[in-house]
Every structure is written in C-alpha cells, then in structure tokens.
Image (cartoon, rainbow, N blue to C red; front, side, top):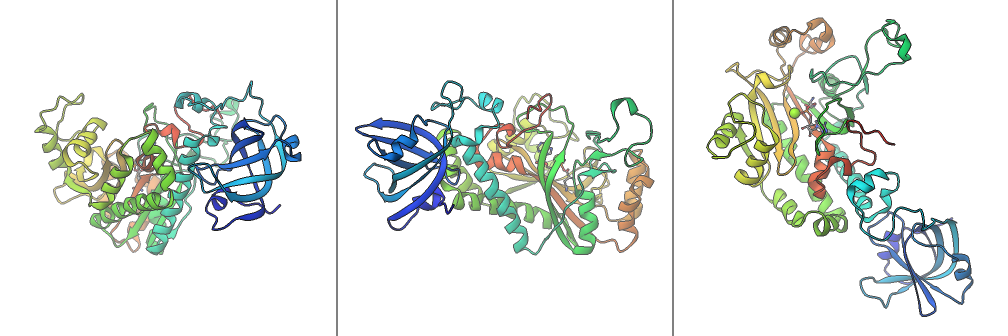
Length: 454
Ligand code: 4AD
Ligand code: MG
C-alpha cells in the first residue's frame, strides 16, 4: 500500500488524486449530507479533514466509525473551503480496520488530566499533547546525534549490566538470574553481583582514552526513593567524554549542546512547541528563544553560596557553605538572580563523586553543573582525576577498595591524560523544551517509586 503521511499531504504544493491516508479518527461531525472526519496519523499535530458524501459507497463502509477508530481513506486532495487548513481530502473509498466503542474508549473529545492519562499511558500517544511531546523527544534525540557527529565525536554503547558503581551513591538496582529461594547461593549468572548501570561514564572514559572524543546516549537506572517531578528510576542520559580537555571545554560543550537542541526544536517542531506554549506553559517559546540568544551565566560554587546568603530569602534548607544545592536554591539562582541558565563550578569535594579532579586548594573539585530555570540540575560533569596517586588516595579516603577499580586506575597507569565529560539528563532537557512540569509526562512509560504499571 502506497500511503502518504498527513504531514506531507498538508504541505502539498498542488491538488492530487488517488492518495491514501491511514490514521485514527479524532472527531466526526455529520452535517448536510456529509461526514466531516478529522484523522491523525502521528506525523504532525495537525489532522486531515476528510469529507465523505452520505450518498457514496465510502459512507456505507465508514458505518459507525467514530473517535478512536483506525482507518485508511483513498481520495483526492482538494483545496479546503474551511478555515485554518489549505487542503482537505474528498474521500472515494474507506477501509475501516478497527472500531473503538465510544462507551468504553477512554479518550473522548475533551481535555483529560495528566494523572488520568498516566493511567492509560498505552493510549496517550493518540492525544495532541503526548503526540507532540513524543515527536519533540524524537527530534531532540536526533539533534543530539547531529550535534556530536558534527563535532567528530564517536558514538559509544556502554553496558547496561555492570559490575561497577559509577556514582557510589548506593542507588543501584540489582540484576540477578536467581530465583528468590536461590538467593545468597553465590552462584549467580556472573559469579558476582550485577547491577543496572547508573551512568556509562567510567566505560566512556576508557573509550575516550583511545577514540579521543566519545559520547553515549542510553538508559540509566537509579533506585532513588525521590518521588519528585524531576526524578525517574529509568531515564536516558547523554554522556560525552573528551580526552585532552579540561572543565572549561565541557562547560562550553554543554552550553552549545543545549543551545543546539533548543534551536532544532524551535525550527523543526514549531507547531508542537507552540501547543505547549498555548496550553501548558505560557511564554515558553519566548523563553526558549531568550535562552539561546544569550550565553549562560557562570558562578563558582562559592559565588553562588554568597548570592544565596545575601538574597534575604528564608530557604527551607538554610544556606551554609559546603552544602549541596537544593532545588529551591537552584531555582533562586536561575529564575530570580541570573534570569537564565547558570553554570556552577568548583564544588566542595565532600559533596561530589570520587572521580572528580581535585583543585589546588584541596577543598574543591573541578566539577560543573548546568542549572536551568524550573528544572534545576540539567547537566552534571567534571574534569576527571587523571593523577593515579590522587585518585587512589581519594578512593581510600572514601573507604573504597582501589582493587575494585583496577581497570579504571589502569587508565591512569598507562598513558593517562587530562580529560573531562558530563551527563545530561535527556528527560530534563525535554521538560525544558516543552514546559512539561512532571518527568512522568515526557517518558512514554515512566518508572518511578511504586509505579511500574506497564
Ligand atoms: O549528576 P549525575 O548523577 O552525574 C553522573 O551520573 C555522571 N556520572 C555523569 C557524567 O559525568 N558522565 O547525573 C547527570 C544528570 C543530572 O544532571 C540530571 O540531569 C540527570 O542526569 N539525572 C536524572 N534525571 C532523571 N531522573 C533521575 N533520577 C536523575 N538523576 C540524574
Ligand atoms: Mg549531579
């Protein structure tokens, strides 16, 4: 079957006979001897209006099909007399594939709450809002690959099953091939503990030390019990790693990446982004344009703390030097102080991971986070500790066994070089692009504490 996508039909230059469109009925109106049927095939936010004459054979085939039904229409693309659309379809024949009983089909033509739609996640791609969100997700992923490809980064695939703990935060899901009664038999698949990865960073570092510039883009898993609108147990991370690079290089890279993806979404998904501007987050498009018109602000951790201290704000988590920044602090910095994303760097080593490079003051590390308005932390990264003695000492200081990191330390034993990288949470970027406030609504099938419905 030679079929045309609705997005292409809507953008056609001239009338066309005998085109075939397939999709799902969004609405049906019967009026003055005709049925006016809006169909959508997911290729764009816009529907195609299909006109079926009541005295035609097509109308008999159409029967009782209504909202939700899947069908295929053949006909002619003709100028539409209706407002808001250039073309409509004059239907000559119809094949109805599947009906959707209006008594039980949950997606009727009214606005449903996000909570309700999360409960029917398997159907929500058929709504305007989620169709738009998932198209933006696809385009944004594409933009990420184009960005790195243009900069000559190699895409690497890091393992999902892992024997190492990158972040050391103890928030890993265990993966086992044992049945519950075989637990502790010491005979598991790998003869050792296995987890789902929390980050592909350590493996990406190893690959960067041969390929030079790499990035991975894959799923990561965290068993954090944070039931917040910004945390998911399964999320996708983009992790570039560059050899012969320092913290300055990755600050620049992170900012360019965010700019690139925003720019791509504004040009390639304009109608979808506008839907979010109209119905979800007023002013979204202007804010996104503003974000790429200017460079991000920068502040050292010490400067950020000083700004918070002099804010006169009564924060729930009091501001003390050495603390980890909380969401309220991140929002104050981005939304009320800088009015744009801000890159905070040189964090105290006590609150950051073992692999971050110690600064000369021995108190801070060459870490950088990109914080964004409403989202908070969007990117977390650092220059890596490339000095063997310092890295091994840091592991011991944290009561970790350097033997467990033998291969990671080998990278420092053999041809060590300064290098740096970061992780960008893809869903948080999508929240920024769409104004969607809950991470559960930018993931087709979200996994969060206590929730694994699909
Ligand atoms: O700051 P994080 O924990 O950094 C790392 O994992 C590094 N190993 C990355 C690297 O340097 N290669 O996580 C990186 C980003 C955060 O800034 C945030 O955007 C996102 O991942 N993130 C989450 N997104 C959704 N749900 C969660 N539970 C997340 N945890 C982190
Ligand atoms: Mg972080």
